[in-house]
Length: 224
Image (cartoon, rainbow, N blue to C red):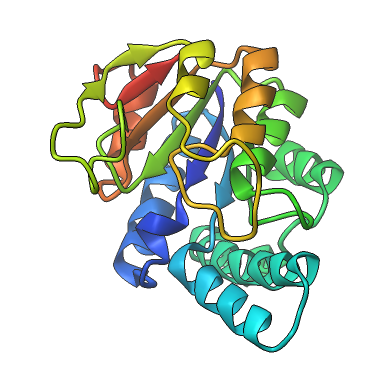
């Protein structure tokens, strides 16, 4: 199976969590040994947002703030890639074409952000579409997708399944901005809606949830 794994910065970088990065490296190696091809996209989390804030206070415009956040996501991706494959994996792809080539050569590619105005959710959606992924698994800081933000609303209800059209109705923000933080970025949802790639949102604090999602266990929220 060819899978895109989106590891939320809210999981591995809010704050930076070396134990989880190691756990994801182990999980990815297990899945690769089982014959799966994995395109992994990592976010920058609260570390990126701290740098965005600093960049804003230093007078950088929103495009420049995004550039800073992209750099942070690539550093975290580099940590994960080296943990998986060693120092020869230290170079992180900076284009979709480079990511596709790396996936073809290794069966695994790890990357962060791509360019200003594009979240790592959107990167993952574009990459999944380009490689014709069978599935996307997003590891986040919640059990799945809820009717509203469960951190703000105690009465929020978890959704086990929904369509991409229904997902759009649950987005808090309908446009990109530097440092946007919600379950899925609106631009990514538009791409996924067009490509119709099955997407599963799981609790990312247990890396083995990626394996469970691939094996078809009832876990998280399934979007199709």
